[in-house]
Image 1 (spheres, helix red, strand yellow):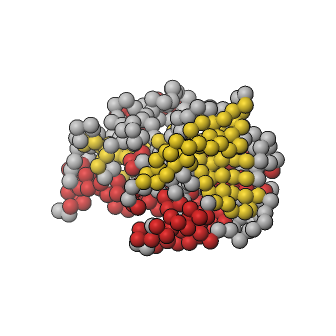
Image 2 (cartoon, helix red, strand yellow; image 1 turned 60 degrees about the vertical axis):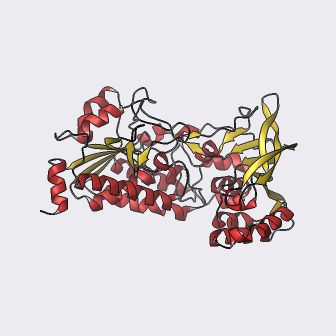
Length: 471
């Protein structure tokens, strides 16, 4: 008897039924791997929103359509008869009318949690709640058509200066969107209401601020190259600091080819010498207060830092010197954190993730939880791009296959489970109207049709009722 067939007989009779909570890249890539590696499987993917694909739809910048090509892979996953999508189905204690984790456990052999990171890290400084301060997540969700952020308001037409706190790729995405010519954005799938607001924006200067130095920035060469190429946009920075840090860090930079390329771009700067707009890379600055006038942002106060420690682990240390800068908008891009959806789950509040071993959820005493898995940002923390999420998801899938092959305990206790079919009554009672993948393709087709009429790839529905009205 082969190891696979032995695993099938020791695990369960009938297909192995897996619930995946969350329909972003982590969930889809885990499903992709499992469908290939474990033929006798039935995967039911559930998401609170009617539409799938998570951050590929709501996080990727509208002028980066090539990154969204992964949706083709996800479509192929969904075409498999062993896969079903249930959108518009909220899961967990955070939803009053949602399904509980316990209900999933009763109906599936295993549950994979891959619902991402839904909260923002806060700066924790006075004035952070003033009008004009928003998180990167909210702003990106707003221009990308996420239903939760459609109503976001920012005084873009009331100031010429915005500050973005953080120096990662999302920070540069935001700076690029704020400074891009409106006619360039019109050709993307950015929402029409965001286009209208950005067309009235008076923002001409964007400061991208980090607490450490140039060597420690988190953005990549691709993002920086695009930023430097923005038409009519000057680049400002402390070039003496950049040159000194590069010179002092040669022993470290020389061993890291991507970093060497990145520092070359930063040192070279922008070809635009005289432009109407500008972006500034501001280093060694920690925000300590948002300055307000009434309820509105009027500026930001920084503590000036210095760097200490070895080249590989430089730390920002406050000097006790302070400076202020006028601005009317502050967007914070300092990281996300996941939240727990059920009190019975172990959860690391400090790191904002579920403790796990190669994707298998473990309790506080390091004991494995039978049939419980995690993938994506919930598993490893909110870092990395789609490629790293794929590797991470494949690792979790391989852990599930290993457990099946070795007859490890699941949630079924030897009895066959019905999967999502067993949740039908609960969904009807709570007036949950599930959206299938076929339904989603109808919604997508309607978005394409509206977009074609106005010269865009698509016009996303940003209200749930509008999505459901298509069906």
